[in-house]
Length: 322
Image (cartoon, rainbow, N blue to C red; front, side, top):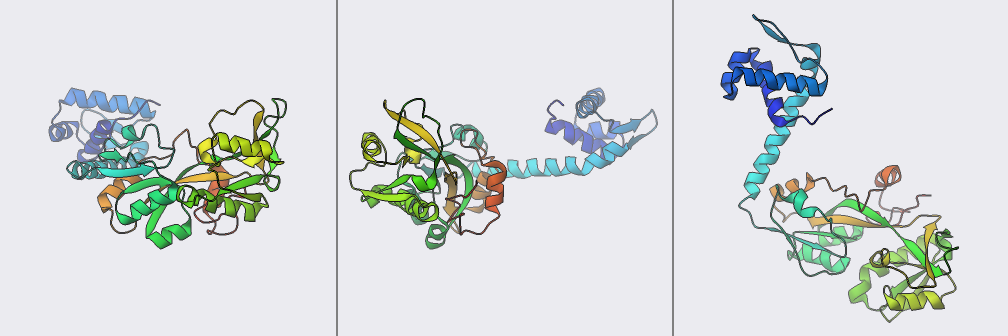
C-alpha cells in the first residue's frame, strides 16, 4: 500500500459530507477533475472503493462508511499537532540534557515541534535529574529511580535500554560465552560526585542477583583503569553503559550476562508541574523508539506492567528477564 496523504483524506471527508463532487470541489477550492483523480488515487492506494457514483448521485460504499471515522480522527490529530507546533514556534528553546547517549536523529524528529537546545554540559544521571528539578533543564535523558522521581518532583517516560555485558580475561575462543550474574563482580567507586547513579545501580544489582560488589577509589568504572581491575579480578566484571561499545585491549573479552540478563535503562525526565503543558505534550507525541537503543519487546512490556519493586527495581533498572 502506498503512503496516503492527509490532503487526500481531507478530500475524502469533504465528499462524504457533501455527497456531491461539485460542492466538495468548491468547498476545497480545487477543480472538479483534480478532486476526482485524487479520490481515484486514494481508492487505488487503499485497495477499496470509497464511493458509489453515477451522473445523478454519490453515496458512500460500505468500506467508505467504515473508514470515514478513522479518517476524521487522523485529520483531527494532524490539526492538533499543527496547532501545538504553531504555539511552540514563538516559544523559548527546550533545554535538553543527557549523559552519554542521545538519539542521533533527535533534531529531525523534533524540528516540527519545538526548538531544542542540547545542553553542552554532559553530566552523570543524578546530576542531570537534579538540574531538571531545579529548572536548569527542561528535559533530560538519564537513568533514574522511582524514588528519585518522587523526591525531586519529576516524571519519566522509558525510552529504551542497553543490555550490559561483563568483561573478563580470555581469548577469542571464549568471547561470547555466557556468565551468570551471580558469578560477576560489579564495581562501586568512592567518587560519588561522578558515579552516584552507577553506584546505586551496582548496589541494587549485587543485592538482587548475587553479584559481588567491589569498592574502588581510582575512577576505574570505565577506561584503562577498568581494564586493570578486570585483569586483577578472578571473576568477569560488569561493564558500565559508558564502556559497552568501547574496544577492548588484547587479552580481554566481552561476555553476555544471563540469569538474569541485565539492562541499563534510559528515560526521558521532566518536571511534574513547571514544564509548559504544550511543550511536554508535543515532546511526548514524538516516537522515541530509537533503533540504536531498542525497547526490550515483549519482556519489557511485561516488566512495565509490574510495580516498582522486586526485579523491576526503581524506574525499571534491574530486570529478571530470563
